[in-house]
Length: 130
Image 1 (cartoon, one colour):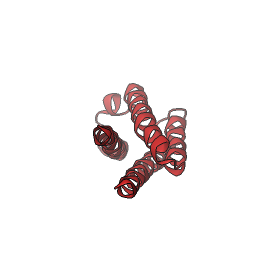
Image 2: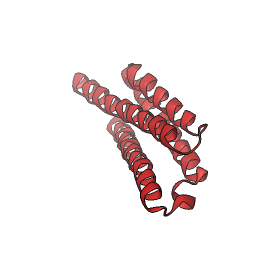
Image 3: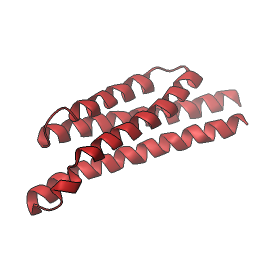
Image 4: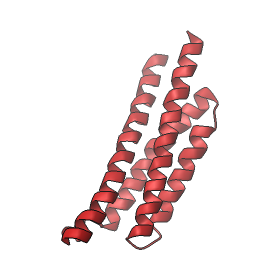
């Protein structure tokens, strides 16, 4: 049963990595498409997309990284991911544009790093238990 819980947490970490990657792609693609072609600004730059993305990132990171931190007793994944979520939240406070993109990309990179470290520490914990 323990491996079942670990599997769920690992899946959440992987989902967090996927969500972070999609967020970065959305951010960069939005700037290119809207700036170069002038298309889709009302959908690609909608504040709701950013709020929903941040809410998903918060939930997935809180569960996966929080659960992992409790399990492997390492603070680094949690602290790094929370810094990333803070950058992402800060991106909501600035107007659309370069500042928002930079804050968001820094944020998703840090959240991704938190998930990667969480996965790595989980595999080390598993190896030590065997």
